[in-house]
Length: 484
Image (cartoon, rainbow, N blue to C red; front, side):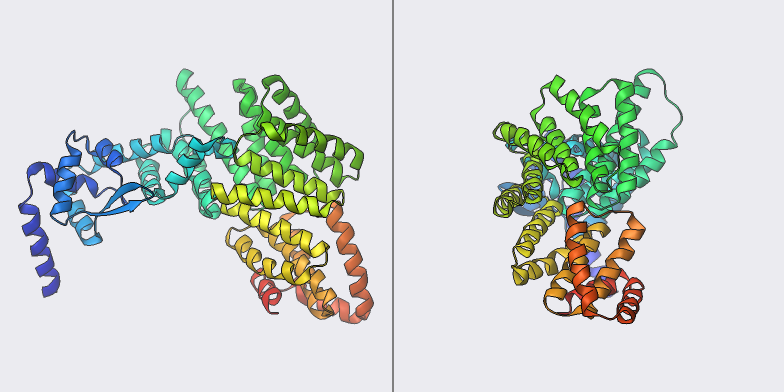
């Protein structure tokens, strides 16, 4: 206690020596979480001489600095920040400062909800720059939830998409769900405000639907995208309608839903009309995948050739990464394993450049699948040991299920039938909960391994091991997979 009193007295003494302008800037700076840039401080403080006063605080050791990727960032030590916040409340400046903080970061993050459509260096640079502002974005969202419901949903969609890229997919989904619930409770609006609210809701639903594909929540994804599609139709927004339809088709393919095909075809016609190359690439990829999983390889090859024909015109973007993913899927389905591996490796480089942790894991896994099919079991197994934990961390249960099945197939090759049976059963239990179906390719491959497995066990042994595997938790199944 005496030490705390001494520290408090020292901070009091330092504060009293500041000019009124420096005191004001220090108080305002306390609203930032995780540091700030000069631009942010100028916007939130409304101090035309912010740089001069900030330098004074740095020279007096009340503000610390750190260079990050060529830009200076400023921080308050936590004891100083708590002291400055007290002074902010005493000065009755807290609400106004938090409002300006919200406005600044809501504007700064605007457009991130559309990250999956980002094209070119400048937009990708913006996405990367926002990763360091995650704590400020969270703080702004918390304030908006209580004090600015009208714009809060916009910020939530932007934060969620940013988090989904950096690996915080589950947090992003949780933020969007809470924000949507609050937003739906707003009273009905009229005229321009109604149009704005509908646009915000459309973007938020599109974001939620897009992110939840990556977490394997296919039914939630479909529901959110259906709402986004309905609003886009009402507003006459063809761009969002096209992308909503194609993302809906993409999600629906995972469960072989019949409405995937008409959605992809409608989206294709929209993007032809708009002459949108990135949209056409998604449409061709969806149509090729749909044909492939239904055994129509000639049709799949046709759309694959159309996709390859426009590949050179797609700019550096998330969509170019998706293009390589689609090319990898389709060439693998056609048995062109080396070509598929090259496409997946090219896509991995793209997502590494963008910094999209989720799709880095997807691409890495697809490369491992090719290695496994080519008989490189040890290499594939080592990769699965890494990626299964990554999928578990982001809550992608269908991906976890398939990884368990891959471990099971390798266990059969390694003549460990007991382990293989438990892993297959655990994966089946996950699929029953999620409703996520195997592709025809997966079904055919796993049927062959299941036949080998049954030949290695008696019927009684198989049934007992299967029951044991189905009763294990996901965590226990993962530990079993990683145990050797």
